[in-house]
Image 1: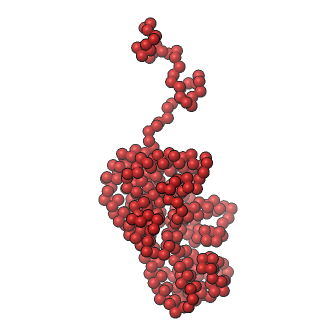
Image 2: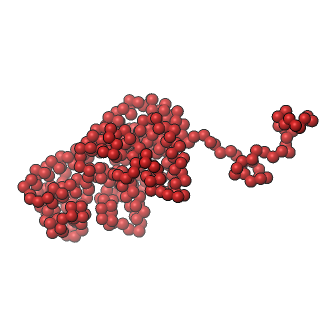
Image 3: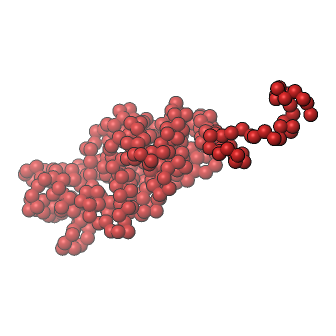
Length: 336
């Protein structure tokens, strides 16, 4: 053993057995050394950049389809956004296990009815989803505001911001996929599945030509949960993500086709009716998949008598139909 203890660098490591190991901030004095946490990034941006290059053709095709949805929603009544958001929220609830139908969700959001002790939390989660898909702050305006969190609930937000900052130069759809998989790891246990999907849907809408004026989200769940089931390396995950989003966006476009055809027929069928109420009522049926008399009254600000009279007229003319077959608590939908 060398006698030159002034130059510790020259001393073999095995001869320094009596010295304490390196101290970490979270290791108390005298405690045995602990494993050092892996400080590597949660997501390797280079891997996702490579996946984007591999799937550039598929990304371009999805961008084109989304562009059509975006363009049509810029010209459509604002209620169309709400209707698509309600469908997406309901379909997402089946993936997360809450299993809510769009009519039940619409009644709860519109009138706060239909909630039970067992479904209260599920409806609250789906209600948040519908609100964030149809409006409210975008993720780019701050994740705390987007998730409606403060204080300790924001503890994972800086990690999410760091992950997304590492891929900010990638296509919005790729950023959305990264955000989804990241928040599933970082988010709170019960809410993170739905929150991750909504975060991704809003992030992907960054490819809009006029953000905030057309499509506020990229549909992901309207044809099932396949979008979210990618496994393995980034190219496989991204391929399933793009394919699922494409199918969901095509389903949204088909919904718009049906609604536009219905509205054209409805306008012709009601063009002889006087007053503002018939047209306002048609707007309600464009926005909401299921309509009750109280909801229609609240949306149009018409009297109960005027509302019931016009609901009866539209039913007689085949514009809408009642689906419960009951004398009370009736629900109407647009006739396809």
